[in-house]
Length: 255
Image 1 (spheres, rainbow, N blue to C red):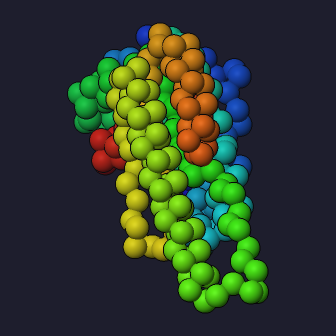
Image 2: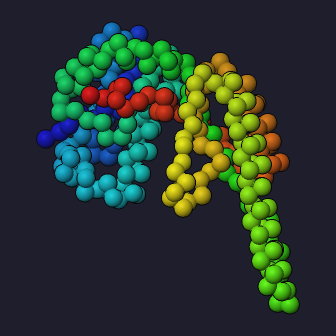
Image 3: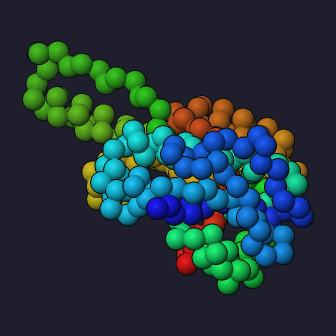
């Protein structure tokens, strides 16, 4: 028994070349291109239900090493197509499956207007990740045993205040850097964090959609912002290019 695993949807005037596509998910068949409608193609594979069926899959989702290997295999296939300039790719979320090829095709055909709108949104563009964290602060001065209790408490307050000021300054620099980079992007999404978890969040975590025509300019600007953040005590990491995962909502591409 098998399911049809869907890696991505590719917009291409002709059938995508499959000769140099990675093997994909362990245990599944090699990826294949299935015509859906117009210039839309599905990149699919046959996945055995004794590994990827709902009951077996749920039991393995707690194994992060296994899930990580599957995610990398999935991403390798998607990135192969997203690097091809003649194609536009809608990446699917991990473990998107259908019972048959016909059902997968029917789902995309039913959503073809939405798919084409998504393709126009992300055409000739890549996703880039931007993350800014507070850098390692200098260790606080160690009070001698002779220090009074009042002096000790005052020093602790001073250290806390200095930490808050440093984070505020670095956060402002991160926001200003992000604002400048967004001007070079087609779209942007910033992740919001729940402060109630007790875990210190990064100063900024975002994704931007950058036209390939702007890639060189964006890269130069990103290097300048990395340096600016470093001067303010923050560490900026810019990663990419990636398929546009953050600019395709799951409910827009899956039934």
